[in-house]
Image 1 (tube, rainbow, N blue to C red):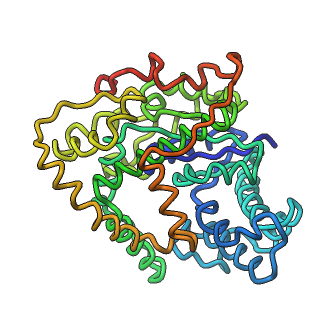
Image 2 (cartoon, one colour):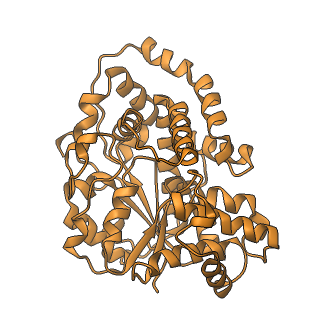
Length: 382
């Protein structure tokens, strides 16, 4: 069956694009966001690998049936899911016991229904749960997407301005509106910058801890600007043969309606932030992310903004943080303090980086150091 594949990274960093490309491979199907490791698994932690009682078993079944129907947090009706509860239960019991078996069963069923033999899952915020991923699946491979934080902020902000499609189902329509409201309440230029810092630091810690055979830091800009080379290298790392037709993907979840119907890799997002972000927004992002931008070769933009203007934005962070926490309280797995501390410690750049020595033959160009020649390019000229 091959090793499971997980795609993680900061929100709006290209995780959906990577999923779309890999899903065009004849052997691979990456399930869309389940948020399992940051939600259901946290709530059922004691039962993640031990037998579930009947109540928790049903809770797990309803969770995945709802995700299969509508996607995470959109209140899909488990009784009308595309997956039958008997199939999910039977597959989970064949794989083992506990919530992890249900997660794997869900992903395997999704892959099998498309004639694929290698399964995986994509949830961006699982970048903060890589330890738990390897606890559950020791042979997993994790792709951590990285993107210029200015592009991430611009994409996140402008996605909130894009009209959303609404369902005829009143319950579903209400869930979509509520999720859009949650995303709007979560946005603040400094908070998204801090989350980028935390997510990229989490990815670096994971690479140092688990090594380049299990963790791959993949820059979004490389995939878009030089897709054949980037994806051929990524496929080799995954043990897959590269198929050029993988690149014939449709633009997904773009923050701009003009992207609808476009197929293939689109260069415009690489430079979009230059024209859509204000000088003050750029200054705030760079004041927060400057150190890690340098590590990944993202050159600073010269902007004429006074320190007082930047300080005014940062002074509003406490209120914005409280608003975002309240808006996301249902997504914190029932343990908000642990959820917040994990991110806060990474915001501050903390976390032990226990580097495992890897033989030169293993630490190949598939995972070059951030200070490599490729990473030092000026993305403004990409």
